Length: 116
Image (cartoon, rainbow, N blue to C red; front, side, top):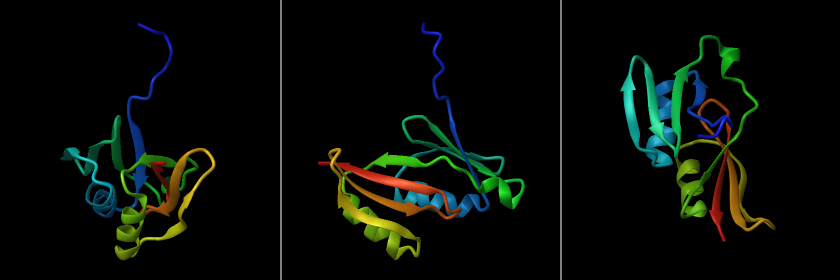
């Protein structure tokens, strides 16, 4: 076994766990692993824990998430229809993906990438 650290869980602090669950589970399609104790754990390759922020400032972070998706154009359209913010519409990038940047319900930047 390697001594290198590995990501065990990604924790997203949120003002509204229900709204965040709707974004990550319903729109992005991440399977729900558990929904208890006021927190939701989703399967994003590693556990993604939606945890209530204890203060409004606690949900302001500097970590961005990127999800590989099968159809970035369709998903971006559905996110816009849900009333969420699209920062950058889908575009082809020189590093081999079609990418969009959106905001989750707490204003966390989420990149959606479709391999070209």
